[in-house]
Length: 213
Image (cartoon, rainbow, N blue to C red; front, side, top):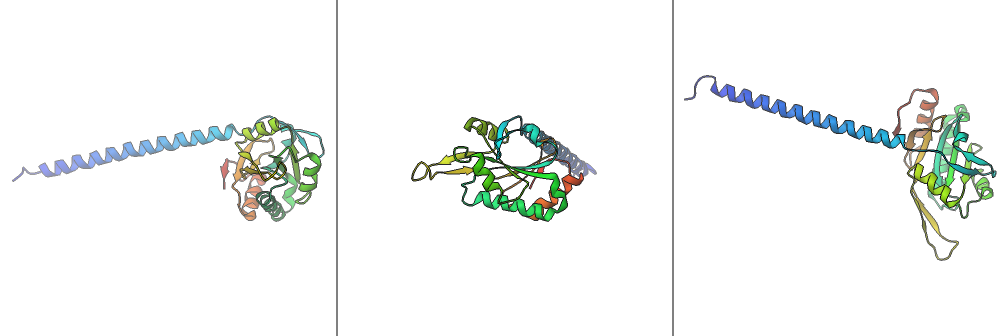
């Protein structure tokens, strides 16, 4: 027979050992989460930067031109068979749902196909979606740098001849504040009502933290 209280002492020690292990585990999880947040914040802080491109009217377009309105930034090209027209149509529908506040928003598509997307081609293409839509082009190096600034992927996919190539590219839409800084991004296929909701929130100031959807 064990001495009175000896078993309870062992149980108590085991309980406190489990409690200590739980505290250590929780502290580790909190540390990991904090580091992940810091990494995400660093990535967000590094998005964007200065650039020099040309708009659909042949005029210089830099980061300064992004100021004054909220901007929806998209990387695509006019010869895109499906992804770009779908993505831009969703943006157009979101602006339609947004209503009058849409005057505070511009849409900028940076071409990933500067070989074919001249200012004239971009102007004709962007006119299909609305007056807020602006197309930008530049030299291949300027486009590469702009895409690098926003971690936008693209690559040429050869076709049957020199003119029939297509472009693989990422299709996120970045939302920028009135100073041209990243505040949100929409994954390809995000519904227009969700996009309109976020736009309304940022325009009214009820949403300020960077995020994605």
